[in-house]
Image (cartoon, rainbow, N blue to C red; front, top):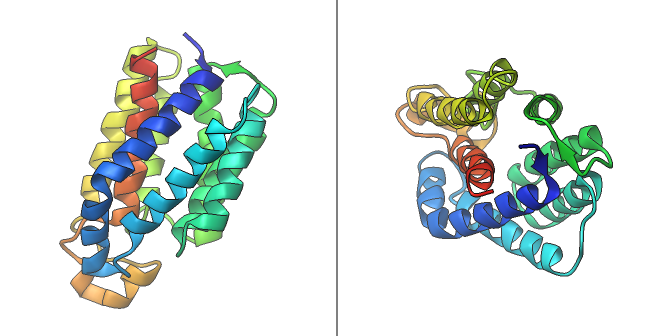
Amino acid sequence: MPFDVKMAISALRQFNALIEEKKEFLTDLDAAIGDADHGINMNRGMKRVIEKLNSKEYADFSALYLDVAMTVMSVVGGSAGPLYGTFFMKLGQKLSESEEVSVGELAGAMQEGLNGVMSLGKSAVGDKTMVDTLAPAIKAFRDNADGPEEDAWNAFANAAEQGMKDTIPMLARRGRSSYQGERSIGHQDPGATSAFYLISCLRGAFTER
């Protein structure tokens, strides 16, 4: 079954609910190695996104993800706003005015989003950022795109979870966390965690279709 705009909106609604549920946990993660505001910022931003979605109808991915990107960029503080905004902006640009896409097309668009995040944040796998969740997840998604859809979505979410956990022993090399030096080791990265939540919700939208 193709991934369509209704599923994309469902994923965003699930993401908002999960961020609301996990905002204190995300903030606690960020308190250990950052500014202690990731959960608060993401919660505020996603609430505003849902307000926007409730006020409009969307016929294609371009319009949907443009609104998400601009809202996140304007509301979410710290580095998360520009990074998530860039991800959604690139996603919308790649998917363009399509109403539905295949797993392979969605995975390719997500790769464009990841490329934008890496370019903006000057980050790579191993730097202890959201990239450590996104990169292996998107690779797994692309690698499994030609097989059964359920397998692709499961590989996507499983790789994201492992990528998130893999940040725990890492030394932070980008962002506010990098100021902590070796004290950043042993803590799960908050951005990698919220990125895992996003991917989980994308998979959730597929499974509830």
